[in-house]
Length: 151
Image 1 (cartoon, rainbow, N blue to C red):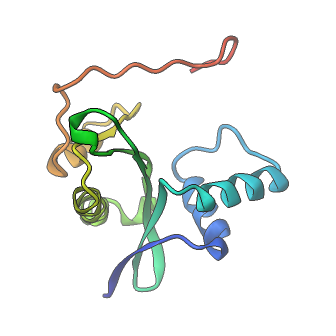
Image 2 (image 1 turned 90 degrees about the horizontal axis):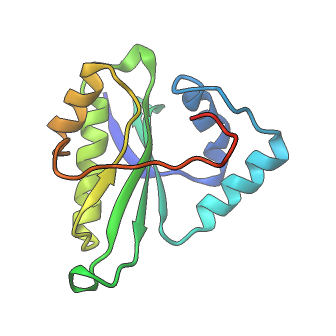
C-alpha cells in the first residue's frame, strides 16, 4: 500500500476532525469556530499540520510548530502536538513513520530540538515516542491551564 506524508490542505478539515474524534472529544467547538481556527492554523507560518495517508486514507496526523529562537545560534525549535492514529490502524508502525518523517523535516529546517508532551499513560504510547527518538528524562515539562478550567 502507498504511504504518503503531506501537509494538510483546507479541504482536509472534516477528515482531520474525524481522526481527532479518536483522540478525544471533550471540547467540541461550533463549526464557525472550527473554521476560523483551521484557517488561522493553515495561515500560521510556523504551523505544519501533517497527514499520513495509507492507501489514500488519512491514518495518522500531528502538527509540527517551528518557532524562531534567539538562543542556540538562533536556530529554531519545534513542538509537536496532537499526535493521533486511527484506532484500527495502531501498532502497525504508522505513527512511528509519521514522527520519523516530521522529525527529519524539523532537522532539515535547522531545529536544534523538538519537544512533545503527552498526557497518555499507556506504556505503548511512551514506547512509540522513545522509538521515534524522544527522551523522557532529558527535561521536565510543565503545563498551566486557565484558572477555573480542569486539566
